[in-house]
Length: 195
Image (cartoon, rainbow, N blue to C red; front, side, top):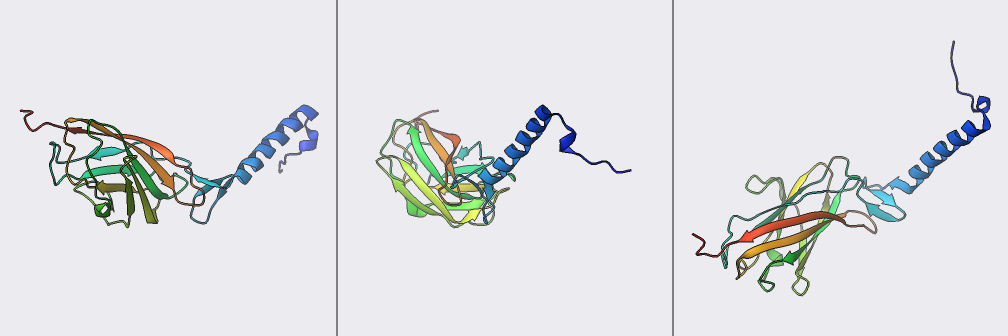
């Protein structure tokens, strides 16, 4: 004996509810269209289904004016992110020194964590000193399920001891990407006479 579902046997109210549920499912399928790159498109824009939600900022040189400083920004892209990582913006939002210079041409990226890094990742970087903002793009987008670290280099650490904050946004790879705020990385710069 086989059982089958016959919608005509339902009363009109239940038929309407079943019809609305089916229509909603079809509408969602039409709105969230997967792209060839595995990204999700929402009304012509590329979005993350599950954006990175945390950034770790590390530096192993944290005294004022240290010349060999490197700032490592690490984030993880979830397996179900819905899109590859096409780029990042990193903008200074707090700190006493708003003039210390960066060297965008020395920016590097790799898979994994600082000091345990993996394969290098091509990255293109620009820096707007008036906005204190880096724009980074990955010519080969980072697929979901990876941890990536971007290293940016100032010419030297800030001249003034303070807590410096950098806001990070993740940009999905695809047409008309909508950036997602990841969070802020915090960097404490110390005066040399702190001891």
